[in-house]
Every structure is written in structure tokens, then in C-alpha cells.
Image 1 (cartoon, helix red, strand yellow):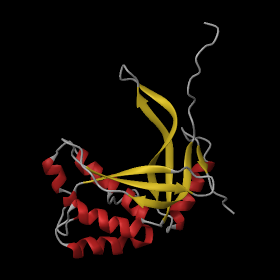
Image 2 (image 1 turned 120 degrees about the vertical axis):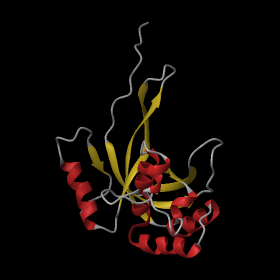
Image 3 (image 1 turned 90 degrees about the vertical axis):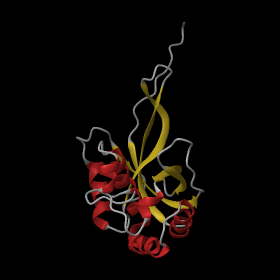
Image 4 (image 1 turned 180 degrees about the horizontal axis):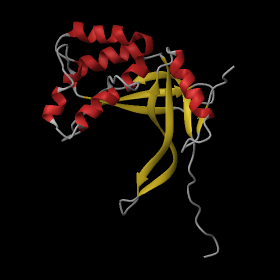
Length: 194
């Protein structure tokens, strides 16, 4: 054949600022472990628009919940890692901390006051707290699996993680990471830094 197929090139990660436009309805797939809460984010400046799928179990939002109990339920640590990535982690900014920013403590208080956590309550509290919020996030190139199960790059981005816009040191760390030429994957800041 005269025309060889093109391949998808590796794309840089994008540091974005956007606005939470909508918090959808939580659902749980049959046989799934987590509830899924779709969150639509509209990119600002040159940032990408996308949808983030916030994963949770309702018990995580209960007043007396202890994350260590997840290690008893699942010694592999996958549930515990999911909790840390989505809700709260002492070392990295979780999705919820990044989405909430400076209102994280008031959101936590709303869950404490709600009593027994249900998917509907969680959905409502997060919809009220997040809709219209400005958030910082990193998009990375999406990877899909081909027919044989091998990973392959796509031409699309997905929202991967968040950073807390209310903390100047986190914003500065993102900017500094974008200036690091030895990074394995280039990071491009999509807003004017001046």
C-alpha cells in the first residue's frame, strides 16, 4: 500500500484551570465496587474541557469512618488507595481536596452533620459545594486497549488529578514542574502565569 498508517504521538500533560459546570447523578454499575459521580469541568484560558469520574463508597463519608478499615476488607490495598486518591491523602492532593480547595473543611462538616451517608446525600452535598467552583487539574493523554489487550495511546486527553488552587505552593509546584526539562512527560501550563 502506498499510504502507511500514521501513529499517535505522545502528547504532553496539561496543567489546567477550569470551572465545575455540572455535577451529575451518582450511579453504581452492576457488580461494581464504587459509585461513580460524573463531574463536568469547562476549561478556562487554554485549558481542556473534560469529565472527571469521582469514585466513592458511601461509607467513606460517614462521620465515624476509619480509612484503615479498608485494609482489613481488602489487604491488597486497592480500596485504601482508591480512598486516598479520591477523598483524602496526607501526602498528595486528593481529587476531593483539589475540587473543594478552601471549602474542604466546610464540606467535611456538612457530611458530619448529614449523619448516615447515602449516595444521594453525597451527590447533593457535592453538587452544592462544587458547581461553579474554579479548580486546578492535570490532563494526561488517554490510553486505551486494542483488540489484543495491548495499551495504545489515543489522541484524547482525560482529567487525571487535581491541585489545590487555594494553595499558592501547589500552584507554584505545578509551574516549576512545567519548567523541569528532565521530566519524563512534558507538562504544559495552559494559563498566563503573569
